[in-house]
Image (cartoon, rainbow, N blue to C red; front, side):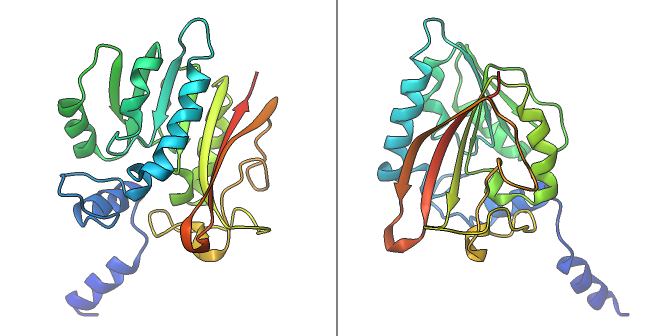
Length: 225
């Protein structure tokens, strides 16, 4: 086998999630708004973003005493930056180290921390509430399984996922970083096999229908204890 053939074969192998996410930002595969890092239109379009912020902020301010929040997969932090003032403390996490360094310089608040972690492998920070906004849809079932058992450490879990319209088979497996399950007419549902997350209560906070019948974005609140 020639060196070029070996190189091609190597490129065909699935990349680790960290490499895949770094490439997405480097090649601007989620779009380009002329900033160094951009987490895609779903984190910037007002018709998607504003209703989401309304329901999450309403939840956060419902507490007499502010709660601590962990934002897993914070991306360019265009969403999370709106939540900081409503939390006792917000810890924003992403797998891309350069992105975290960039966010640390751009967003500086006393009750805000940024951490670079692989949420499927590393221990998660302690908090009252964890937010996962359109993160799991990019990950393989194996990685999601590794995350699910960690979610039970948080009293509240706010999950947002892009799913097909109508009935569908949930949780079809994918290779991390290579699209999302919507291309397989599937979507993530943590309460269904193979994840089977056990929770105390569930509340649907928001359903946003996308244009051109490209599915819906569903935000749900889970309470563990």
